[in-house]
Length: 266
Image (cartoon, rainbow, N blue to C red; front, side):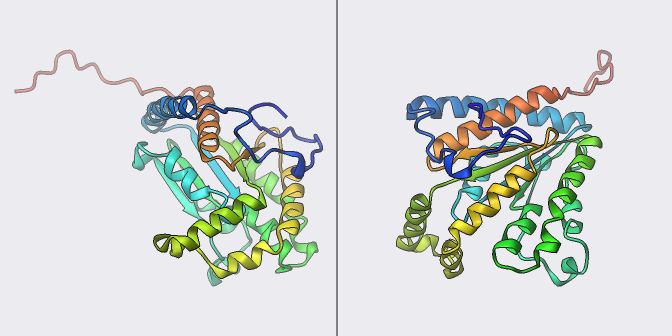
């Protein structure tokens, strides 16, 4: 796997063999912070151009175990960008109306429009993860969804959407520390749920589900990035770098303006 932590379609891997520690890739805290701030300034400029151009679309998907850092990543990476050009959607337990439709119905409504960046905090991938681990639907229902998701994402890319998918990979020891920090700080109790501890008991099952999902749904048009996420500074840095590199490839441009040479403001 390359230093970008990008998976390759069809190349087998074991999730347990992929790093959760980012220190080995960038041990210098101060330098990492400086690089992150510089990249975020680039991101702000590129996002402004994307919004002004109003033609291309970028979808960014975040998946992680509980306390994996999805909220913190979004809060830090997107700080300072134009909120008019970014939409964040958090997909929780489906409503009765959503359950009455196919599992992608609620997702498709929130994909980004032209000029926009759409951010998914959890996503359509919950429908091959939670439903599998907790036997909410039978395997005959969730297993075909791999291909359905790949086809859905192919439709999006064929119609002008660039897709970035990040799995924030933390260790069970790091999750324990983060849960404890939430318990110790009354201001963070709202982020803690006893249900999270129940899910923690299924760590091995979740890792198996994630591993197969990442293997089945890494495609040439929508690959996954497995980000070592134990250290927040490295997590934020490498994700921002990937977004900036992607936007540079998209190369959005300010639209040509009118000839204003003769305009006089009284």
